[in-house]
Amino acid sequence: MASRDIRRAKAKQGETVSESMQKRHQMHPVTYILVVIVTVFSVIAFILLPMYGRTGSVGHIVFGTWDGQDIAWYSGGYFDQQREAYARKAQESETTASVESQLYSIWYQAFQSTAWHVAAVTQAKRAGVEISKDSLDKDLLTYSAYLDDSGKFSETLYNETPLSERVATREKRSEELLASRYFTDLSTGIRTGSREKAFVAAMAAAERKFSFVKWEFTSFPDTEVRRYGEANAAKFRKAKLARITVASEREAKQIRTRLADSTASFAELAKAHSDDSYASSGGDMGWQYAYALEPDLTDKAQVEEVLALKAGEVGDPLKGPFGWVIYRCDNESVAPDLTDAAVLSEVRSYLNRYEKGKIEDWFVERAGKFARRAAETSFTAAAHEAGVEMAETGYFPINLSNTFPLSPITAVPENATPYSAAYSEDFFYRAFSLSKDQASSQPIVLDDQVLVLKVAGEQPISADNAAMMDRLLVYFANQSLQSDVDQELMNDRRLKSSFDETFSRSVLGKKS
Image (cartoon, rainbow, N blue to C red; front, side, top):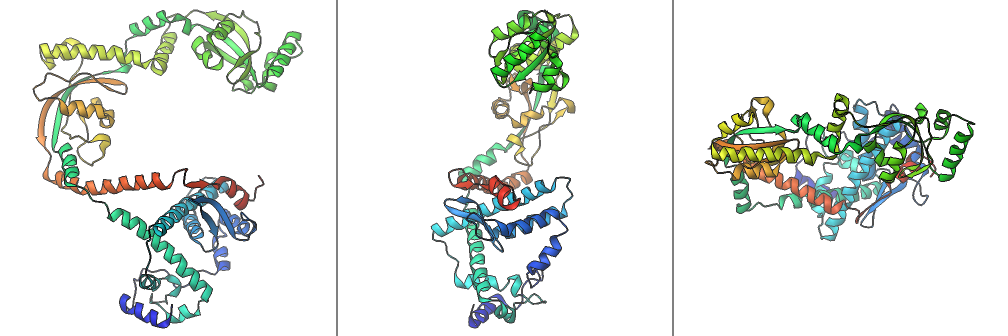
C-alpha cells in the first residue's frame, strides 16, 4: 500500500478505529510456542508440523480438496489461524478427553472451517466477485499488526513490515473478504413472498384446544400377550446353552475333534479360541429362547438342530452369519410356560421389539369403535362406556416440531400430555381439519399410543405472536438457506477429504 493510498484510505475511514481491536503486534513464533507449551497437544502440533507435507515440502500439508482446490495447512494461513482459534478454546475448556482426542478435534474443526472458506472463495471468484482496492485498503487500516498502542493505524509499523509479509497479508485478507461477501450476498438476497408469509401466518392464525382419550401400548393386556405366546409357542421354547464361535470351518472342526477326544474342556476351548461375547465365561450363554438364536444362525432348521440337542451333547459346527459356531446343550429345550410371569414378560418384550404393529392394530381397532360410539352418543358417554379417562389440552396452533416459540401442546392432567404429538404431521392435519361440531376424530397413532380427539375450543392467535411470526419467517428462511448451501457445497462430489490419514501421518507422525 503506497503512502498516498494509506492517506486516502485514512480519509475515508477516519483517524481512529474501534478500541476493541486486537493488540498491534502478532506474536513472534518463539513467544507463541512458549505460551502454548502449557498444553501438550499444542506442543505436539508445532513440533511435528515442519516435518511433513504431501509432497515432502516443509510446512505445507494438504488435507483434501474442494472442487480441485487444495485445503492445505501452512504457517500463518487460514487453516493455521483456525487451528490456533480452536486450540485456545480447548485450553479454556475443562475436558477429560485424551490429548490425542483433543488434538484431533482441534484440527478437524479447523479443517471443516477451511473447507468452507475454500469453497466460498472459489465460488465467489468463479462468479466474478471482486474486492476493490479501496475496500481492501480500508480493511487493512484495522489490521492488528499495523495498529499502534492507541488502536490507530501506524504508517511506520506498516512500512517496517517486510514487503513479502505485506503482500501475503493483502492476499489473505482479500480471500477472507471474498468469503464474507459470498455468504453475505447469499443471505441478504433472501426474499419472502407475500404468499409464503400468508401461508405461514395462516398455520398459526388460530389456536385450538381438544378433549381427548388415549390408549397407551404399555396397557396391552396380559390376555392378548398370552394368546400371542400360545399361537407362537415355538418362538419361546428355550434351552440352556454354551457356544464357541470361530472364523473358519477348519478351526471349528479342529475344536470339535478336541472336544470329542476330551483333550480339552468346552470352557477352556471357548476361553482360548472363541471370539464372541461369551468367551470370557467359557461359552456359557445361559437360557436362550428360540427366537434369540435366529440372528446367529443361517436358518430356522439350524435353530431346530440346536434345540434338539440332549443335555451334555455337543453339536456339529454350524455356519452362521458371524462365523462357525459349536453349541453345547446344558439343559434340554422346554416349551414355554405362559403362566410364568417371566415368560409372559419375555413374550411382551418380543412383541414390543418385533411385532409392535400387532399391538398398534389392537388399539386402533378399539379406538375406532370408540369413535363410532361417540358419533352415536357423545364423546363423554363413549369414554365412560370404554372405561378410558378424558383429558383436555390447552390452546395451541399448528406448530410442527415446536418450530415456533408459541404455545406448546400441554394437557390437564399434565401427565396425560401427548408430547410426541408436536412431531407428528398427521396429528396436526387431523386435529386442525376436524370440524368444530364433529363428534370425534379418527384414531391417531403417536409412537406408543393411540388418540381420539374432539375440538373443545378455538381462538385467534395473539397480536404479539402474529408479529413475531413475521420476523421468524425471515430467520427460518436464512436457516433453510444455510442448510441448502451446506448440502450443495459440502457433498462428496466436491469435497474430497483425506483428513484422517493425513492427520495421523503428518500431525501425529504415525506410519501408515
